Image (cartoon, rainbow, N blue to C red; front, side, top):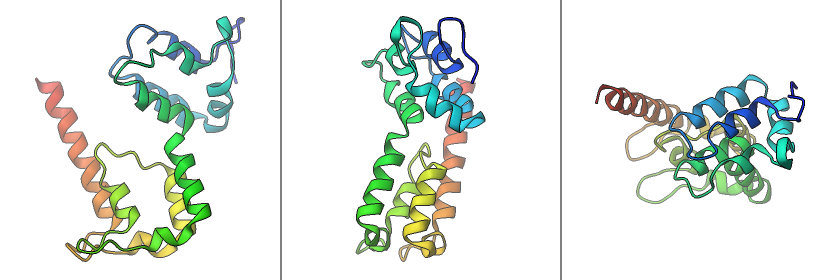
Length: 163
C-alpha cells in the first residue's frame, strides 16, 4: 500500500489526526479505509511508521471512543469469536432457555451493529443453519435482528444530527 516517506500509511495519518482526542467519526473513517483494502489494512494496522508507531499507538487509549477504533483496526472480537468457535463449534448451536436465542441471534441484535463478515463466516461455518434459525420467543431470524439493529442505529444517528 501507499506510504509517506516516513513510512506512514493512510491509517497512520487518520490516527495521527485523532492523537489528542478521538473524533466521533474516527471509527467510520477507519472502517472505510479498512473496508476499501482489507489485506493492505491488516498489514498497515501493524506497520510501524513515523516515530516507530502503529496507527493505534497514535490514538489516546483513555479516550471513550478508543475501543471502537481498536476493534476496527485489530478485529479483536472477530478473532476471539473465531477462536471460540474453532475450539467449541457446538456452542454455536446451543439454544438459551426462555428466549430460544442462539449466539448468532444475540450478536445480530447488538446496537449499534458490530457483526463483521469474519464473525458471520465463523458462525456459519460452525452452524450453517444458524442464519435461518428463528427465535422461539418471537420468530425473528438473525437477519431480522440485524436489520432491526441497523435501522434503530440509523434512526438514532439521524436524531442526533437534528439536535
